[in-house]
Figure 1 (cartoon, rainbow, N blue to C red):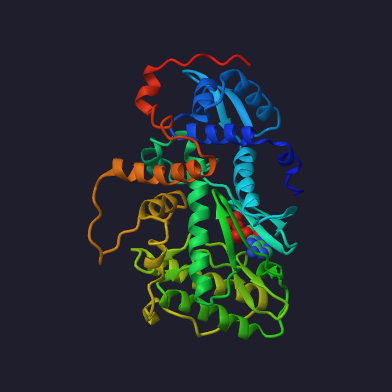
Figure 2: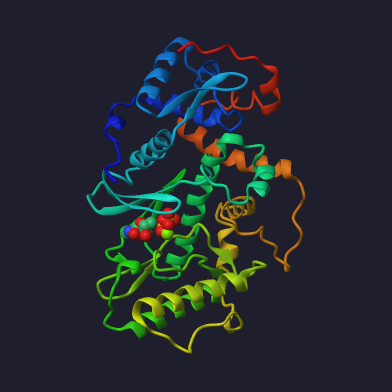
Length: 378
Ligand code: ADP
Ligand code: MG
């Protein structure tokens, strides 16, 4: 684990970022983005773009690859990181970068500082890359998105995390204060404490056990289940108070498997307390104890985190597609859905980069097979 290599960011010009963004946009419909297409999306001269592309490859932000039909560029993880960090830096959310503090299952975690010097936590979501869960389900669903699905999935994971963290924080749940997000990056308060898995003894084991079980119930009364409520996602502060983190897998209590998710969270705590602290209690919450007092789950779906996004991320995380019995059936139009999902990020990018949007819609996947792109000589 080391520092985020951000020194290079200082040397990148606005044209570099324009080209990186053009590749990001091109990747919505193309596995590899040919040089001339990048030049056209970026509205820059082909000759000039050639050198920019080459330098971006040299710095590891893009890679140039040989495809079956044509060769072209794709964003690397690092390239995507820079796009997000660039936006967050311009918004003056981040002032400087520090060390990596964690590698999660599906993320990298860094300490960063605000422009006022306050230490914050940066979480880079990484989904949809080397993952073979639900391959058969996913193959069908993601066939339109091809290689861009890791961009898309990482972005919705961050969007979902931010939306839940904000709704929970607003309700005074003990979660880090969410500060901002962009693409696959979430910026939140840095929790001063250590994960429960590193805590060997406690002054009051029973108090923490009760507090955690009460939290599970409070979540459920609000309409949600954490879904990964374990010793890795519970931070313990010096005063032995818990702070809950890691929200991309949260589900509604209206999910068809809600009871199973709820019991799994409860059992994680029971099992851990028995193993680590030799503590067992007859008292633990049951799904039937829940008294719904809030609709946090519904609020999330109004916050820009759409149903389609929810479905896609759940599929990726192995949570079955949500079926809510108390709801009208959704319109069955997968094509509309796809467009909606793509539009929202295209708009975001256009706003930032002020690129005219005529180019991005010129080429769709049908045209891709008919057009023969000029080979890019590198
Ligand atoms: P993943 O989804 O990959 O499991 P997590 O959100 O659980 O990612 O974060 C991974 C690790 O990073 C945590 O176990 C914790 O040690 C650290 N971490 C995450 N968020 C924070 C935070 N806000 N403050 C301090 N440490 C954090
Ligand atoms: Mg975690």
